[in-house]
Length: 538
Image 1 (cartoon, rainbow, N blue to C red):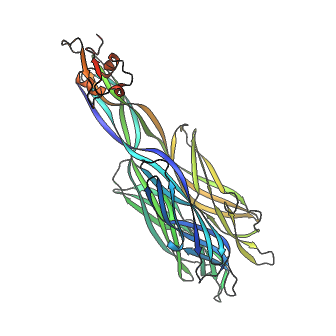
Image 2: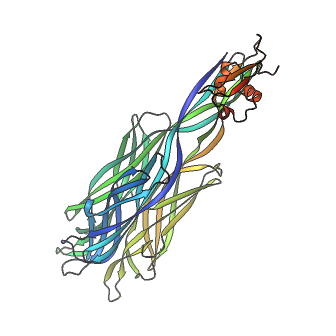
Image 3: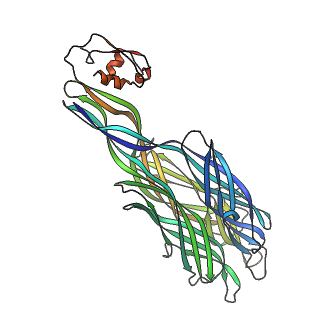
């Protein structure tokens, strides 16, 4: 007598991961209420809306990018020439396009992000925009695996087992959260006349699992670049006001997603800003509204016991139905913090720095590679420095910008090595990189220091390949008479396992008697098989 206790696991199998890039262009217009354009100082954008549909072997995409432009306009007597403008929806950068899928017939999942936006003036009121979107394509599907957890038998048998820590996917979803707050422009900062640029950055985020939901909490830091208002009601100089974690004015936010209760959940998430709006009804305060996008996935961690072999302690033969299998096992989960510090020299043609105002880093591209006991993290981004420079014709300052990664200049690159003791080559990693505070300070008239803090959530996996036992049977010696020779004609749906069970023999005995080398692959309909009278070879 033999009894098997069976288990099952659902693991997500990824068949292909690839990145494609979609290039789009169009025209952007400056409304009549704004001054005519002379020089573009900075531009950045947020992927506001995107829809996609798979048609045959193509992914067809369309959407809008909320575009933030800072420029120098034509001089006027009562107005500072610098202007800031935000264009949303169909008034912003609109795109349509398609990318080819690597293969047909797979269940493709996709995620898009904006990696580059460029504006080129055409007239005093129009600009040509160029967008680059990175499309990550994943072909994956859940694979359900059945296995034997435990075997009980009389007489006793010996079994070999393996323990695995695996992840089973539970949810993956996209959510959006609107956040707003009112801010005072506190002394000694002067009151506000006009907004030039506002940057909102998520930081200090954490994910927790409650009774029936996943909660992601964090804070938004705000940097406001504006034209000040003088006591006589005129426009004054440029000012930068920050509401940060350090001064206690960062905006708290929470994103909640319904989720089942799990004992050991694994939570991964990505956060990004989809849009920012600033309004001011009073010179000494402003209102900031931000839209946060989040992609949240959760998996359940499960310890699995799998029987890999067995042998009887007494009489009999254990016949095992095997299947070559590949399991992805969790090796380690770690959290690391690191700081990237870079000295950046101004491009040769840019004027000297008199005062640093604001550093804008558009969405960076990250990559990582696992080595022996180390994770190498790298990336690149486009950076724009807004600053005041000496005019050269007097003591007045001119507002200008310098860029890295645009106009033929080198990209802003960064990297770090994170120690992961015990991790071996051949392992794989899933890394969530969360930028934290970004600080910039002036070193001298030609150099700035960029200090960027990151938090990394790292999960390390290893792929285990082995012969999985799907079923088992105990074949005992039969004392009764046996026919001297027995033949069987293979029927549709027959397998070696089924035939062996029907005649109380083993798969190995049938394969040996019929010189089968590929087992079930050779069991064509109508094939004649010799059934051995004694699987024990007596």
